[in-house]
Length: 63
Image (cartoon, rainbow, N blue to C red; front, top):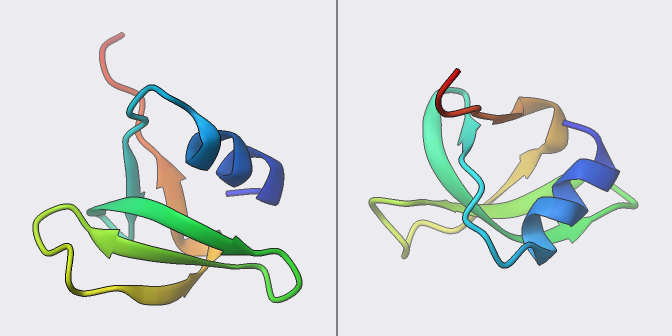
């Protein structure tokens, strides 16, 4: 995922589905200097971790 799209998703009021290597996550913060994001799995909010933006994928629901 590119930095701009990650920023848009993070700031969006709507819930945008994002996976990190197939695991649904919530983007909490971005570190654009290191191209990483702080995320946590939707099923384990206490498991916060820093991941590469390249591992994030927006999941399109529907058509």
